[in-house]
Image (cartoon, rainbow, N blue to C red; front, side):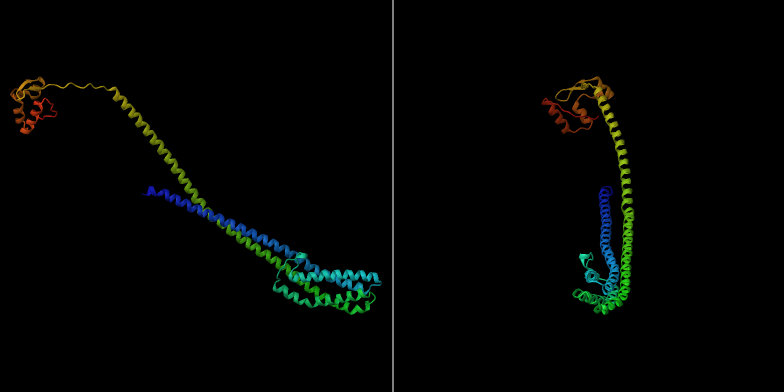
Length: 333
C-alpha cells in the first residue's frame, strides 16, 4: 500500500513546492513593483519639490529686485528711464505675484504641480500675507502713477517707503518657508529610505524562506530521487543478468532435450487365455515376477478373484475381450 501511494505523495509534494515557489516569486515581483512605484512617485514629487524650493528661493531675490527698482524709479531723472523702469518693474512684480500664487496652489505653466502645503508652511504663508499684499499694492500704485506721468516721483514716495518697510518682513518669512520646504523634502527622502529598507528586508526574508522551504527540500528530494533511480537501474541490470542467465539455461535445456532420443519399448506378452479365462501361455517374465505362485495360476478369472477383484470387474473385462475390444488398465498383485 505504501509503495502504491508514494508516487501520489511525491507528486503532491512537488505541486506544493511549486506553489510555494510561485508564491515566493510573486512576492518578490510585487516588492520590486512596489519599490519601483514608490521610487518613481518620489522622483516625481522630488522634482516638484525641487522646483518649489527654487521658486521659493527666487521669491526672495525678486522681492529685493522690486525694492531696488522702486528706489531707481524714485530717483529717475528722465522720462525714458522712468518708462523703462516701470516696464521692468511690472514684469518683475507679475512674476513675483504669479510665483507666490503658484507656491500656494500650483501652476503647471511654471513647473509647479497642484499640491497641498503642510500646515506649517500654510501658517508661514499666512504670516507673510500682509507684507506681500503691502508690497504688491504699493508697487502697483507706483507703476500705475508713473506710467501715466513719469514726472510724479514725489507722489509715489510714500508707496516706496511702504514697499521698503515690508521687504524685510517678507524676506524673513520666505527664508523660513524655503527652509521648511527643504526640511520636508529631506523628510520625504528619509521616509522613502526607510520604506526601501523595509522592502529590502522583506525581499531578503522571502529569499531566505524560499531557500529554506523550497530550494533545500527540493534539492534533497531531487537527490533522493536520483539515488532511487540509480538503485533502480542497478536492480534492473541485476534482473537483466538473471533473466539472461535463465534464458541461457533454458536454451541449454532445450538443446539437451533435443539431443535425447528415446525409442518406445514394445509391450511384453505376459499371459494368453481363452474366452473362459483358462491360461494357454505363461511368459518367462510372468514366471519371474510371480516366482513359485506362477505354477498355481491356471485360470485368469479364478486368479484375479483370489487376488481380491470383484465379479463385476471380471465380467466387464471378459465382456470387452469377447467383443474383441481392448481393456486398458493396471492389475495390482
